[in-house]
Length: 152
Image (cartoon, rainbow, N blue to C red; front, side, top):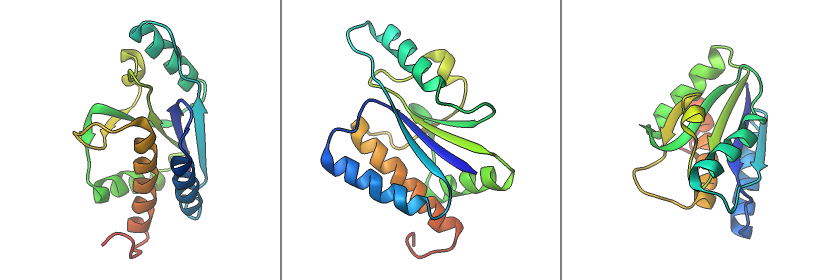
């Protein structure tokens, strides 16, 4: 199963870039991983920004991919639950699992209906931090699936 993580906007902070690179290297020991940034939209009304950003995200999704969208209204899972979800996708023959972090105004309603919604927490985090948290949880999921001691 191939993993693709999409997000809107650049990772600007050096510590974020370093953390993303570190977790990406770790994850790639278990599965192919691609990280994709799409350009964020500026200077439009929120609904128009969502629409344009979602169009850019849509172009990065392989046909037939399974989508997991990070959204504040999404389901909350613990780490073993996310690992079980990833394991089920892998074991059922999912070719591409795409995880998507939206822009500052989230996803359009139409895009939100395309995938399963996941919330990392009821708290609000910066989009930069969410990228790191998501990759850490992906890595943790693979260590759980492989009975490795990272998660105990």
